[in-house]
Image 1: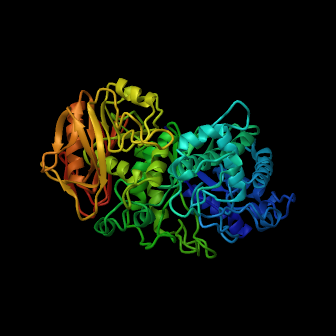
Image 2: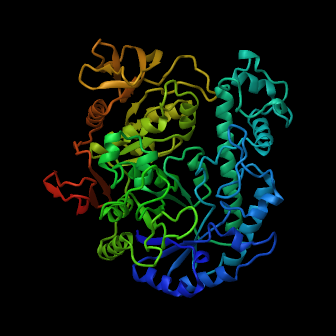
Image 3: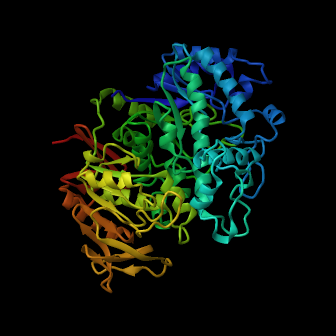
Length: 640
């Protein structure tokens, strides 16, 4: 697999006189790809129906003449001001009933039919004009779906569309749906919430107390499907005019929509990697960890998303935006330590990325992102990020080809489970994402390479160990597939705790084939009242009380079963702290026949075909497996 570098460029921001010089410098730095156009709607269509493509024609020609390949973005994340005058009700509405305003970006509701029609027009114009352009070698739809909490809208357009979605989900003898089926699925007899007609159903906000969780879960599924449909609208138009691959750039820890379903209509999954910004506002990290990695980023957060989006892209992964210096949007915005841009780039390649593109080419002197660093300063002098990007380009030219191979360990991530946990966390701050991430971190500290899978994967039998924590709803087909996989299974807590309508099932959870265990009741724990384990460590945040005759692997100090095993299945009846989680991963790995390491918290490794990559996020050298890893380093070696 050929690995390449790129950048994000905004010719509309800069004088025409410097475009050739910019293109020459990009190519000279070893860059291949340039993404353009994704925010330029007001320059492409300054008035309704009046298109201005001459400047974009010229920009693409200039970049192509320098040997660069263009990723052309559709501009639908930034509808121009005239669009609001034309469709004043297209704005998304927040949960408090307040419409979003013009003056930023992503100010649209996915359900608004008029706005979708406008998007179809501009995408059609772009695809028809550039679909066969030899310099346009890839496309990007929109930009960062879900960023700024913009997936879920409580607008009138969303209300109308949700009612139609519900009619299709609960079909009756006619096309109007079966309201009795909905009432039964949601349990609306509770609190006299029964509906007489689908047109009676409102959106689940502004209720006196919490809305019905079944109502909310269906609304979250609907909102996700609206993103899928919006993206599909664009991909179908582009494919009618172009055969080049199509990507979307996802974000870190944005889980408001099902990325697997969006990815099914794309060729490439890309994402925007901002390790320092994410550490401050998205990584489940302690204050001490934030301080320790303030200039490096979390050692596992970027890797997790590389593995997740490789699954979303069915093996094809890009980083469309890689942080090259300080960002502007986090609570605190330090500069990365020298060497980190290089490390982040190589980490992406080790996890299967085909391309790493740095955001952005030149730091903007105006508007919201003027404090966001680029590869160049605003005065066009090279920044540290470009120095390291050039180094990576030189190393790529000399490095052998690296192929991605299947890992021995799989971790299932399910967006539906994320929504279910968010709707009914049962304790302050409890999060499915964080539970899965804790498991991923423990697997990585044990030296494992990990593939992340969707819950409907047909590749379960290819793995020796499968971890699937927190799957609130487990269809019978998934239970059967896991049991038949032959892998050691690491499940729980909250496995199969709800059915597909967010009701407690009977028989009581987890009701897993081959496991003699029933959760009799559950409790969430205060942060200052963890439950001690006999072998060390604690249960924190969430605990299940088990009735079981299975083999007991871990107990509390009071002798209550916490981790039980039967056959190939291990069930965890609580949220384990890092020490207990690491111990559990070693036990599960041993049963799966997998060797474990016990890596320093700053050191990670990743296997990629015939090569193993070692990464040291720490500012001190570390010895591991007979080698010394320098501070802030990447080491590549041939595998035995």
